[in-house]
Amino acid sequence: MKRKILMMSSVWNEEYISSLLQGIRRKMEEDDMELHVFNAYDVTERSDYHRKEQEIFYLPDPKDYDGMLIAINSVGNVPVIEQMISQYRACGKKILSIDQKFDGVPFAGIDNYHAFYRLVEHMITVHGCRKFNFLGGPWENEENQERYHAYCDCLRKHGLQVEQERILHCSFLYEDGWMAYHAWKEKGLHLPDALICANDNMALGYCEEAEKDGYFAPENFRIIGFDNSDEGQHFFPSITSVNRNWEQLGYESICRLLELIDGKRVPEEFYLQGEVKYNESCGCGLCGGSIRENFRYIYRERRREIYLEINQRMVRQLLCGSTNQAELQENMGKCRELLALPHVAVCLNQTFARGDRSEEKKGYDKILNVYTEHGCNEMEREVQLLPPDWPYSEETRIFLFAPLHFGRDAFGYSIMPYVDGLMKDMRHRNFMESISLALENIWQREELSRINRMLEQLYTQDALTGLYNRFGYGKFAESFFEEQGGRVYLIYFDIDNLKKMNDRYGHNMGDLAIKGVSDAIKTVFERETVKVRMGGDEFLVMGAFCGEDDILQKEQRVQSLLEEYARKEKLPFTLCTSMGHVWCEEAGETLEMLVKRADNNMYEVKRRRKAFSAEEIR
Image 1 (spheres, rainbow, N blue to C red):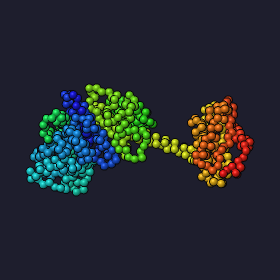
Image 2 (tube, rainbow, N blue to C red):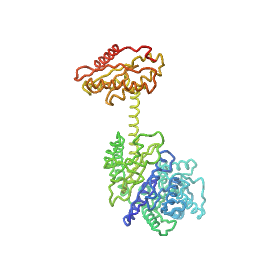
Image 3 (cartoon, helix red, strand yellow):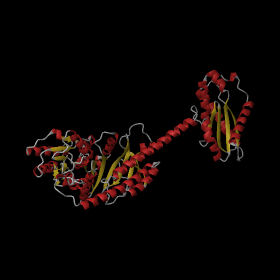
Image 4 (cartoon, rainbow, N blue to C red):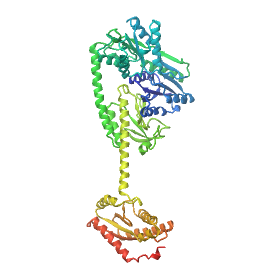
């Protein structure tokens, strides 16, 4: 029976996760399973962006999985992971953590201590180093602590002093290397016998900054790192380091999780031994191949980077040029081809489609709008996470989930079958960020359109009645007249004795009369008509041509509604309008001519009717 495994990852190094997944895939060739990877980028920061990234961890439901792998190495404490561990334990699910320890959770990782100890001892016994600087990662990071303790223990065993002013703990970043160089340079400590770096990134940064001052390894100082990264191996000088063998770690980790699921006993902690690589930066000579081979590698990588940069720029332009979600869906298909990506599904919160951003949007709706190359469908998230029309195959058994968000708002998430290189060359990350930016642009466009509609409504709509005002008449009446080819009818209304109503009962009563007439007009006349408050007590309705009998029926209906309205509102006067109409069966007259005739007809009706006396307004 196929087993479904959940993996939570946070990428501090794309090569790290890619290698773990290669090892897990090896085991998947031997065992029937499906892997869902929920990945967040850079969760260590404390900004809105990084906080929204972490919400992807809340998406999976424990009941849907047989076990969980945690691979958030080097990101420190992530409270959401602690919550997920408690939730999964409560459901009786098996958990294994890779490289980072959690209380009560089985662990698989690299033996950082002994590999790092061997490196430091090599610098002392082989190269005779006596003055050391240590550049570490975050102090709270367990791997950093293990490497630091190995450094201190090795120095003390050989009778060397651990000098606190020569120790810095940073963030494992390339930038930390050049920052540390300048910090020690101010103290005159920047050229020790050996610089011990807790990873290759920081070692590379230190070397490049020292070169600006004319100092080089290993001539002026010796330097080591950790991770055996491709950049470190092809740098000049190549960095002495430790190969962590991440691919094997991925394989061993999934093997132990499956054993736990099968009820077997496994050690609470498993350590894979790292392989020390002695290279040029410590003075041990070439280890990474010939100069010609290194040049070829650098050339190929640079050509590949240029190709990806061009395509990613085209992708961002395509996606961010999308004016609506349908166009975005079409452009995503083109982008997949440009980036040689597998199938992509974008699952959007329905609140995004409604444009509701009055409050911060957290997490994901129960019902999502799912966009794939096959179209758009609704999907109930609590029933299924993968789209029903997903192209399943034996090759697509690893699925990568990633959050889509901007600022304080979660838009939804994406799903993509995992293929080799997808994360290592940043294709996935850049594509997700481009889609998120495109979604924000679409929302901004729609919000601007909504605001423009609202402003247009304020500009063209009478505030009291909701009918068009004179500006609305100028904007819509002529276009309607032209659409109908001049074949229209017009009715002009005038409220009888409105001035007397206002004088005797106040303008509030006059407003009620005006509201009553406008309500009657909106009730009687179809939506496909132009209804205008021309000003004060005058109204105009224009509709598609109909005969005089129909017009008279509409007028009678208006008057009946006015009488009903007056009774309902208990008005202290009779509410009545004078109405004049015209109709045009064949084009010939202009709109202005028809309006003038309707207005004249209304005044003719008014003159013929018996005027209201003061006694009738009671």
